[in-house]
Image 1 (cartoon, helix red, strand yellow):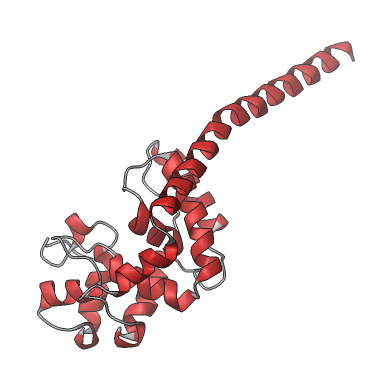
Image 2 (cartoon, one colour):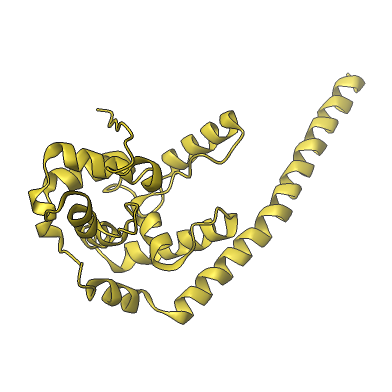
Length: 212
């Protein structure tokens, strides 16, 4: 009985140490990420950023983007887009498991809203502080904008490789047409491009696959 109590106490102590260690590690990351978010907001508000994007010559409203493209985009990038509030716990948990299995940072589990936040304000450097800042911006975007507005902005800022930003630039550059004229195969190719713009764009010669 005494031995069991000692073992139990040892396990409890170990768990307490792990918990305290996680707090010590996580707290500075959250603090620094929040400061990064605050600085970004001080430099330019979300309202000003949105206005800046909408004033670009290549900006295209949502009703001029093929519905087939929007459907494929959400299916590929963020299947629970219309049900979450900027953060997808399921996708994030799955990404963490896959990263642990791969012993590398291969998946981020970011939602479309988080990706928009990153494109609007932050670098693509894989830092935990940036991910935290991105979450704060994503929450603001979900609070201030509709899902349709967020999706519209995302379609206009996302990178497609070869210095193309937004679906209009991508359709013009790769196919010489407007987004409304994209064929089913062209839509699939451009949606797949988003996963790795430099490797999977239509000029890179890679084979794309979108799972049903």
